[in-house]
Length: 142
Image (cartoon, rainbow, N blue to C red; front, top):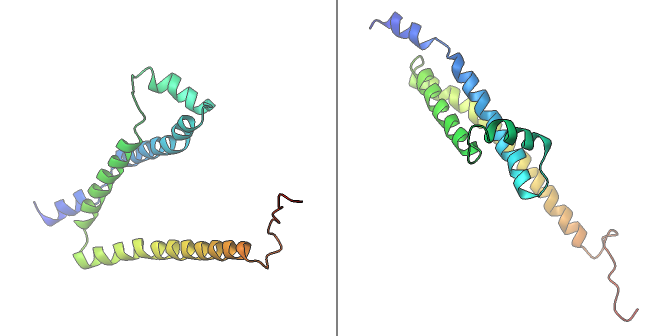
């Protein structure tokens, strides 16, 4: 195979992966938000009942497939990473991955840390004897 043939094969876009990823994401969202909540409290939502009536029962599905779709995400990610790595040098690939992953990670860690500090100091403030928002406990003698 010549280099032009390899580059033309690497540049192609797999549209079915976009559709597969979209379907998997909808199933994972359904599994987390709707199916999990309907099982937790005893009220069934309209969406959950509709999905059960028109999709789960007619196809004989025993449980939702959120776990399976997470595995599909991992498979798609592995395929895409291997596919992209064919057209870039290792150093270029690692540099792009680094700047794609670590800035959002650093921002998420900073936001989480800030929120946890604010909540920690807020709970300390509420427990303080000087806090004006504290409930006054009544004694039995009153």
